[in-house]
Image (cartoon, rainbow, N blue to C red; front, side):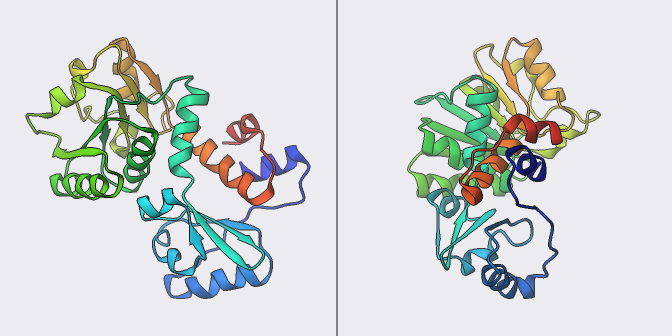
Length: 256
């Protein structure tokens, strides 16, 4: 998607993969800096470890505890996490929806993507966030950490918790980050009967384009949004940081 956007904008850049072993990470970053690479994306397993190599990091990256974008400027290395703003851009620009400021939200899953979503919603001003996950301990740990870091009220619970149905009913936004949504043969993580027509259901999984959760939510009268937009917008944000040019997101979407 980046190379398609470079071509569309007439920019003389190229986006290529480098495979870096964990023990070589610091040397690789120093090498990119030395040869005047303008920026890189950082993927697993380096998103936490790379923080040691940066000059400064954004507030989103600090709160999430992970960096996915580096920008090299005049000898400095700036670390960002574009997933959090990418979530919001997709919701607001692609879905023509808004984060329900002052209302409750619920996030399904407690992995890396959930961390980004929770930070995005907390910084945008939701009143409270419930994090529900198969492994209860991960949900509780993430909720306690983010409650402390952001000052937004959060609670963690398991998917079989008796409090979950009410938490879903009282939420104006539900975001699914669990990859089980990719498997159409798997049952939904929640009962569709808990969804209210005024709840926005945002599934950041982008394969299939309409997940079973989105289909069930549509049948309940909910507004829904899939995950391809988050992938596009987090990339577009990085693109602009590196080049100073706003990319054509439609070109990036078509490439994906």
